[in-house]
Length: 404
Image (cartoon, rainbow, N blue to C red; front, side, top):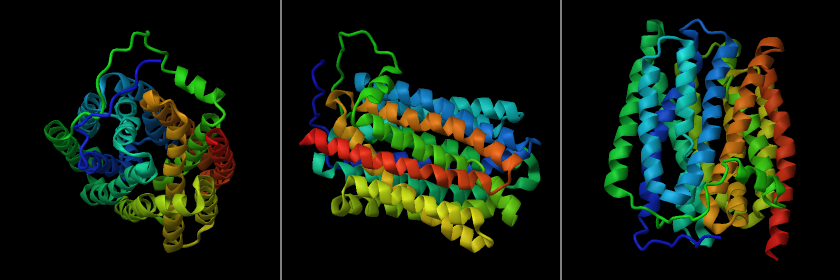
């Protein structure tokens, strides 16, 4: 084993809030795009299955990116990886703004997905600078940043879009997303310090898929990765068709979808920033995962059957709270079970497992939407939350036994 990376003296108390602020800036750009994609694609005359390819292609790229960048950040440091990925994300938004057709948009989203595979790098930074007793709460803050990105980004995207202008009507929010990424890059260069000491590993580079294989043989990580994969498989089946579903059932516009998603972002931020850490302290990791996933499942079933728009918005928001509860707890299990010197690699592999699920699920969601009905992908998502809850309990129990 190579020597463990040293904790740098420069990891100040301000390191975590500054990094989270920069990540928020880039995630606002990401949130700007999400509610626009179904409408952006239909502006090109795309079929529903092509719309879901925008989501699936992005997740396919993210799958590869999480495997690559998490491992790379263990070797060369977190900050260089964050710089590379944020610059490329900004260029991806700009390219999407001027995409000449749906297939170009799909290719651009796949490439952008690869460079968005930096969540494990952010998580690795948090692990590097956090004492064990604060780790779960700080990992929850990452989820809160995602939630805030879902508050600000979709609202801006929905308000700035002009569907009546065709594809060009979606350029203003995409250009704004580019500007936000550029601002995050400038701030990252100026403020954030590296959290790891760069090291030279004498061993040849490992196969990027090696961590996935090791995790599947690990008594704790196998179940924890299963929670991530099934949980995101379920949620992405729903999110990939949400705009199409909302338009088909309630005739919602991009502005309506953006504002509802902003409300879910508030709920997600509160759940991951406050409720998740509180639940872990009071209930434990396993019960928190089960509570989150089972409650999310129940709310998704209600969403699928909702006869009124206001009830659908409430059910969606409640399901997001449940979905937000389990994620920091699952990430904590992975961090505690993984080799301390390979945090980025295993967190990246976990993110890749979730990304792979997000490749498959949108395609299935699109097929169900087209062949069965708008409600079908949401009910499908609700069903798959339940085995994820069972795996979460197993992972927590296996971790408890391993630490005795």
